[in-house]
Amino acid sequence: MAMALIETSGLSKHFGQVKALERLDLAVEPGIIGLVGANGAGKSTLLKILLGLLTPTSGRASVLGMDSVRETRGIRQVVGYMPEHDCLPPDVGATEFVTHMARISGLPRTAARERTAEVLRHVGLYEERYRQIGGYSTGMKQRVKLAQALVHDPKVLLLDEPTNGLDPSGREEMLDLIKRTGTEFGITVVVASHLLGEIEQVCTYLLAIDAGHLLSAAPISHFTQRTPVLAVEVEEGADRLVAALAAKGVRARQDGSRVLVAIESDALYDMVRDSVADLALPLVRMQQERGRLEDLFRDASATASPGAAMVTGSPQ
Amino acid sequence: MTAQNLQQMGTTAPLAASSPGGSIYDLGYRHYDGPRRGRSWAMWSLFVESFRSVWGFGRPMTAKAAPFILTGLYALPALFQLAFSSVISQEMTNGSGPQPELLAYHSYFSMFYFLVFFFCVAQAPELVCRDQRYRVLPLYFTRSLGRLEYALARLASLAAALFLVLMVPCVALFIGDILMKPDTFKAIGDELPKALPAFPANGLIALGLAAISLTVSSFSPRRAYSAIALVAYVLLAEAVPAAVFAIGQSSDWSWTDKLFLVMPISSLDGATNWFFGKALQPGRFTGSLTAEEYAIAALISVVLFTTVLLFRYRRVPA
Image (tube, rainbow over all chains, first blue to last red; front, top):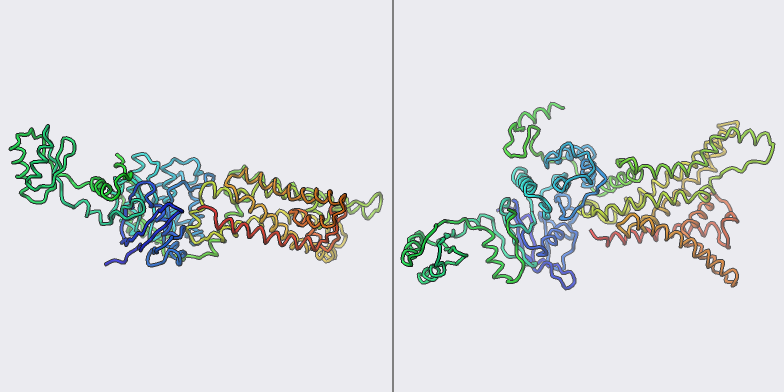
């Protein structure tokens, strides 16, 4: 059993009347961890508490066994942080800026220069790195932000909305970069995002928070390997099919012209075929679907807090 | 390229990297297991970076213009005297005509302080506003550097830069004074004790101006607003006591000259006279205050403004 990298217990953070986090209990193991939730769900607040930028109202949080309030300095040596907002001065080059940040992180002069060259190459900045950052595209700026978070070779990388403002191809590249950073370098990455589709692509573990509460926490395989779903598309009479299946004790739900059926046993396929035949419905297709996170999420949020603005769709 | 690097390339460089972003140069990611230094190194690094950016190094040419021109202008009268030192010394030995009045260490700042103040107005906002405006602060505060250390390193770098500005004319005056004398070695011995108080005096001026200008500047992320606020503060703090004093003279209030102690530049000026053991020039200073009292006031203002700066950085949003 691997040691929990990030732990929180009863963690709460209130800003006046606003409860950004409310009694959050987490135990995160190494990997690429997706932290999903709508805007304002408390993702950034959680990251800032882990970094010691904010003090929790109650409860405690720890990173690699170090307390976020008492051992802030220890945590900061092994954590890299990429903020959600712009954080780059426009009038210096990427090389100079990242080298400076490396020194502030405690790297000696020569090591800072070498590491800077290495991480800038890793994030894919080449000739441009001597130009002033003010002239960079959003995608290049995001790469510099990632580079400054990586330059001191942290054990944990906290990325707050790393794909913000990127176009689809830039987003794919950034996600690929995150995936490589997490898998090839053995750095634990926490990716906060409101786009579930992204999390699905790169993460090994999923934490979903909403309004400061934990909605779910499980390995991503847990979501994708859950009870498979059979989608039955009929030209008409979907409602009658749902009723017929329900009469036989099968869980089914209408989704437009489709009927989604939980595949709980092999006998189900026959049961569905027979029901369609009995009702003489015009069947278009039957297709097994991979359980998509979004479907699950919609269910979870619907039961947890109806009305809450929930995760928007995938980037495509 | 060292043999070790070549070897690493040979063993780890994948020519056709598996990922689409890979290239022939991709050596793979290497972990860093060298030394990691602590807080004092981080402070030193920020100090060096700040000092460089005060002078515009690592920035475009336009960033270098203001600091270098202002430093040159401030030193110009002293350099002028240095350039004509041989002519002046001839005049003095001939004794013909009126004796020229030479620039002195203790009154130099008093005459040309506005150029040093312009230097502060131009460069102090640069140091503290940029990081707030472009929200770089979270990157510092999530590293080894704390908020107070950040503020202190910035303050020290501006003070060091100002000290340099203030010392250039003093050094020019020193060299000029020596060249005017026939016996150089004897002149060094004679002049050095007179010049040495320039170190503590200029040190105090540098600290005082740095503390005031950084503190006032740190309250706005906008350079222009910070500069305006700084000019407004210093003008008001110099003018209001003088005005109250003028009123007090006609109304026979005796305490009004104590207000001079809050004047930021005058108190530093008065303190300079104390370091050189000179009486306050009557044309420049009115009222009954002594140079010693100005020196104490200047020290208190350094402590006070530094404290305000640290408080500001405890709360500045990151």
